[in-house]
Image: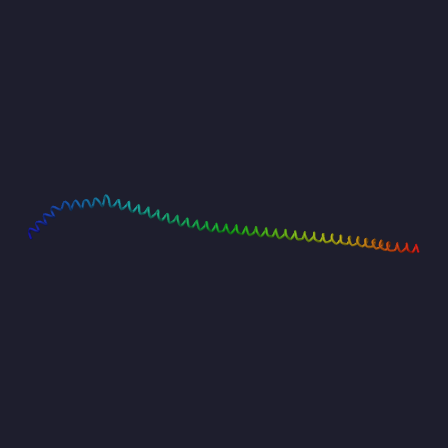
Length: 154
C-alpha cells in the first residue's frame, strides 16, 4: 500500500503544474474571453430585443393607421354614396317637374286645339247650314220654275 501512496504522491506532484496551468487558463479565459463575450452577447440580445420590440410597435402603429385609413375610406365612400343619392334625387325631382310642366303645356295645347276644332266645326256647320239653305232655295227655285213656266204657258 505504501507503493500505491508513493505513486499517488508522485502523480499529484507531477500533475500540480498542469492543474495550476489549467486553473490559470480557466481564470484567464473567464477574465479575457467569457466576461467580455457575455457583455457583447447581452448587448446584442438587448439590441435585438429592442429592434423586435420596435418592429412590433411599428406594426401596431401601422395597423392602427390602417384601421384609421379604412374608417376614413368607409366614411368617404358613405359621403360619396349620400352625395350621389342626393344628386339622383334632385335629378329625379327636376325630371318630374319637367314632365309635369310638359304635361301642363300639352293639356293647354290640347285645349287650344279642341277649341280650334270646335270653332272650325261650328264654322263648318254654319257654312253647311248656309249651303243647305242656299241649295234648298235653289232646289225650290228649280222645282218651281218649270211649274211656274207651266203655269204661265197654260
